[in-house]
Image (tube, rainbow over all chains, first blue to last red; front, side, top):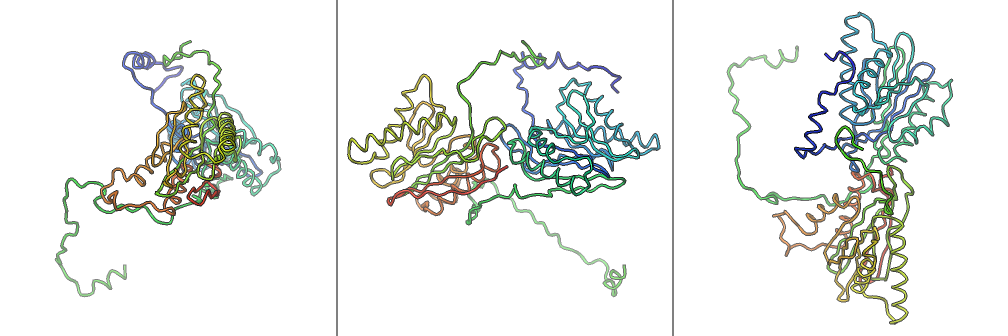
Length: 273
Length: 227
């Protein structure tokens, strides 16, 4: 287990690989992204878009960016997809073990500390920008975590390439006395703003509403932007043989069934079960 | 200045060029041509405008679409339009498609040492009434082809056209038995650019599509995704 501080074990190896072995640093899938979190009277609402990009190409038009840390603590992630998934997965694991060993339900601030300490150790090279929200026994909490490990606690947050578009909506619409429906609608509009105005964000809107001992996940709550508008009437037809057949081998799938034992009232017996 | 990964970072130099994204394509049939382009103008991760035309009708029998830098597209189209007008007024007849194609090539090569950042496709009907498509690089290399795609979505569109128009990598249909009808070509072009809009972030919003045949040019517009 890592004791603490910076871990630069692989620095020398990386430099050598690039200089001597002509190693090409692989392109990472970033999530582009608009992610948002808002605190309301009874809890928090998290929102995210669903587009994952690899450069200018959409790698996944409908991915899930809201990750579970524990039952009532969820985390939306922007940045490199592998980094957000693995970081949240690891901290979720550590939090579960911790809550089992302490015998207490997990707190949002614990997840926050675990995440920020982990990211700080990697000096910003783990490109995960997170919006952590949840309700524990001390109440609702919402935090933002930057890749370098700094955190902020705020009533409303937006991150990712679409954060400016989303923040414009949040700043206009937020008030501290919002109820659940208002908060959901505000988050929805903020994510939509990111989807429409930012090229790195797109697809559908995902929402997650967390209240005391209650979590509702609305996957793809708004799909109006992701419908294909034109499809040609005649489908693309490729007759058998359009790709050259080199070898043909036919395997029999159906095996003959042998009746070993026949029972008279077998069907009635099954129905009784 | 070296970063930890060993990359050498130079002070970033000013460049006169930017890429505003977008995709264009054209398909030629026996007696018609279909030409289309999207209308989204982007800069980085932002959308500057959802409608900025990349299409220009030069004559009733010939049109051009261009992708690349909007400023150069605008200027090239402006110059091309006025040159076509001058020709028509001098010779008493509109330019033939072959003449337009050559003119575009010359205009581009004129700027050999400070090129127009444009990737053009000219399409139309030639003097014999046969559909034609001409594709160019930034400095005016001219090639007559049956179909072409350019722009940010070109690598998504070109393979579809290779398979469906040129029948590449297909052993089920013989070229002699296959005829591309106007309706199929229009549907294919619309489908191809819609698919590019699904996976390319710089292609979207609206498409201007134009069908050129012996009766003239018919222009149309349809929507793509806005996200």
